[in-house]
Length: 204
Image 1 (cartoon, rainbow, N blue to C red):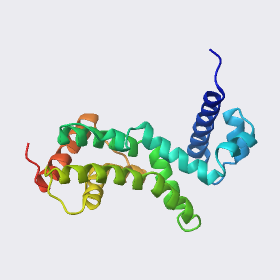
Image 2 (tube, rainbow, N blue to C red; image 1 turned 180 degrees about the vertical axis):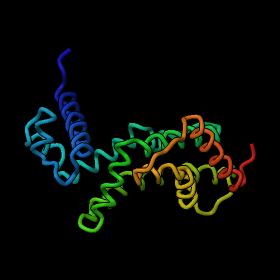
Image 3 (cartoon, rainbow, N blue to C red; image 1 turned 60 degrees about the vertical axis):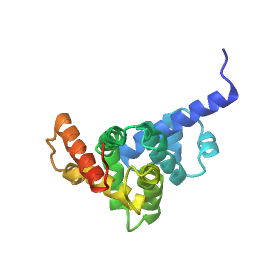
């Protein structure tokens, strides 16, 4: 069947985001131009601007797409077993934040914070803030049902996610070696989730 106009448009949009993401990581956000993104995506610059009004907006969508691809939005938090739901979510979260792309973007925002604070703001709102919000909303539903005992679900979400980062993520951001195996990571995350749930009164 021939592609519909909307299908072709969505395919081009995805091509643009993939090209932009690769260029941002390999040569930097500041030095990447919309012309280069268009060339790598195989579309015209006008098409890039038709989908994304600016490079900053395109960057925001790339960060949001990364979260969606790793199922770190509200759709990734559902199920009858809170421990299993949070464990699987936190494992996906750990995998995402420790990826080369995520580490690069974090370093980029920190390095450009003084001269391009708007970039850091866009990154935070498109990524961390959305993930914190998703976890906070899920925890709020558990609290409303009496499964957890907490007064501030958003603060609790921040606590869980920051614990889940671990020292390994800091070492990666600093360019230091990390020797944590996949099994060790899973064990660490499981302990983190169990500690968190016990702290907020969860009883299986």
